[in-house]
Length: 232
Image (cartoon, rainbow, N blue to C red):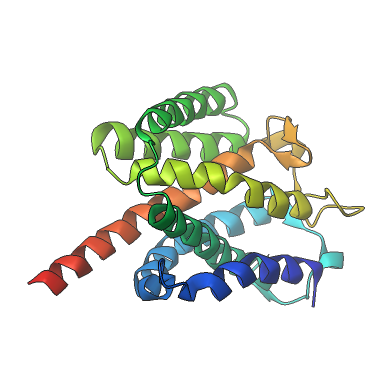
């Protein structure tokens, strides 16, 4: 198996094994999660394919299996299924085990930061395709779900994103070369701001955010509809 494949396997192993925990019972939400992930993944895979073709980022064949869908290695395609699964597992675990945690003040600061910094970084770096797209999409999603639609679940999303930062840094650190001679995933310096968290471009924080927030939104809609049907 490729190194990228092992990263994917390690990412999904724990959450999948613990999905049958009685208190969380995450397996009961698989259908909703699959639909939400698939809808969002289609957009992100198109985004990923386009940026790969344009040379904005790419993949080191030394760490890949060698199978591709379009220009994307199969490991990269599986990333958009595995990472949302792991993050949504954290989302449900935190709701189940920390239902009384005070999240309102934190979520307000969290939303302001991502809305403001997303617009700022995206506007100042509008010629950098990755910076502009990831940051501006993040800002617009935050403005809509927190300030316009005022979704109650946004507080849980913010808490989940914060706790998920540790596994995010580990996984993305490996992918961007923190433990290898060359990165598994490389980025064109002309399309990022430059600052990195160890080896991770700062833009990845916004990209991951933009991936997860709409998945949570769709997931919560589907979950609410299912609950209403069961109560009828």
